[in-house]
Image (cartoon, rainbow, N blue to C red; front, side, top):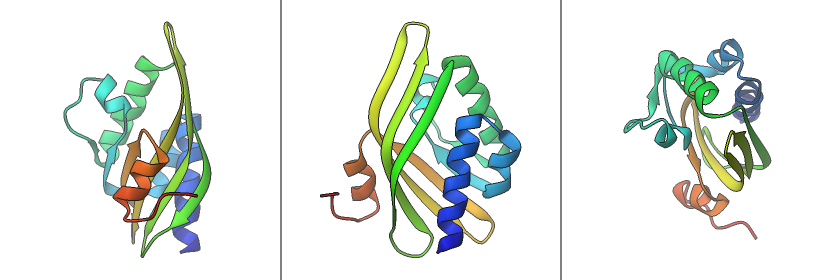
Length: 134
């Protein structure tokens, strides 16, 4: 379980730095990642696999001058499932985001296999079957 948490924490650092090599190192080749940026990039589907993560980081570079996920709390819920809650800070010309966020991660033998970003901690906790934070 400590490995799962470490992989998720390393993924956040890689996202923040936009470091594709570090991100791919902690993610399984068949990862499915569903961030809010996908909707801003007019994607109907999540990003899939390592090529999808590369495309995600290209989309981030086109949409945001800065995108910084800031998880504050991590909760392990079951085998390989971690929920992180905190805030997202992002800005681009004409757009600023400073909002609560939640992330649901699933970790398998080859690394992170699934990630989804929610617009609230409660939504992420609910998706993981956990009670709301108190």
